Length: 492
Image (cartoon, rainbow, N blue to C red; front, top):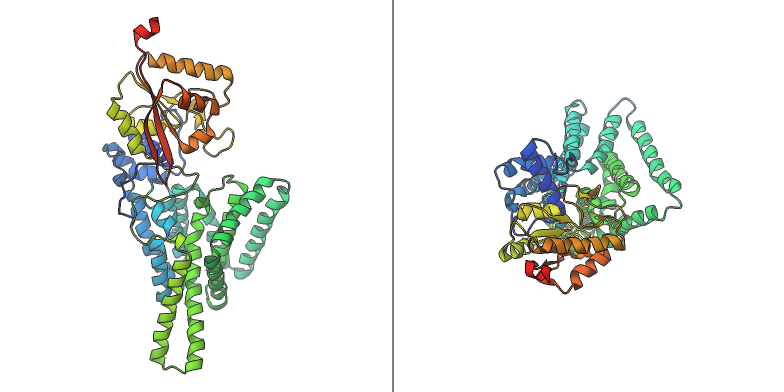
């Protein structure tokens, strides 16, 4: 599923960021953007794709997304090995299915972003930590886990929280062992609850915690119950408590970071929790199935062979029920498009730029867009930028000193625009129309977060013609064109 339809959909807005970095690396050897800014954020995927950009393959989405698909496939392999070593072959088989069909896992394996790489190195780090706990005399696993953490950070900056389970396991394997691990738990709990104390009067902190916890405990109740059962049984039965405590500390640290530093209500930021949620849920299913089979065996006095068959049947039934109840988290057949989130817009950029080029986009024509980095990608050049908030908050635009962060495209109006600025923008568009046609691209999210006066002018001006419009389950996007003003009209 990770390779199916890999290039079927156009790049979306955030993938354009990764493309801009990869193109800059191919040109300069390091991510020096056209704006003069060096963008080191999440550099692994851009560096891996820089050779493709150097070969002129950056427009081939299937090629550029290939690394992410391979990371996704690798995650399944590493996850199976982790579950087999930590629990049993049965749990490993269930976990392999869950990872293979997990909606978020498949979706991010088909995106030119760092989340798929983060998932792969996250599982690899926990695999090395499990090996370190299993073979306490071989400390090389801890060093390999440390290397995995560095690659996870290079994939996505949220990988930094993996230092917590690494330190936890290292302490647990040290001289003071369990006491050190419990001390770390107390420190983390203190840090988490102190965030509530420090920001007691901050409504936003409460809202973000409610958002993430509400998503897990409201939308995923069966998954969470099975995960808790599996985690409790693993602490009770497993000799690898140091590993399980490390997982607990890591999950706690994820919420500390999200609650304190990530001020955006996006479910993808807890995406990294789901691989371990699924792991313990699969173990919970295994234990629950064994208990049910044991009760039936006592009632019916089954033979050993019949009991083994019964355990397998119960296991398959419980696991199948789990997949059905939590089917929103799984994809059961290959798809060409995946709906990420409401605030993760995926416009049909193929259609947008095909419509513009089909009309005859010429040297004298101008493009005005909320995402000039996408103009650079598909048209080979940008024009003017429309300021809009990337997160919905004031000031969170892709502008630096009224120029686009990635392309240096000047803003058509300032971030905080006055009536005078709007008048200047209108006059600028008129002046640009004397040189050629002016194209304006707007999608659903940018419409909501840009200057509404400018939006009204673009959508309602008598000279604005709608060239293209696309409404899909992923996003809505439209292209408006202002025809060229001829010299005779100007003189009149």
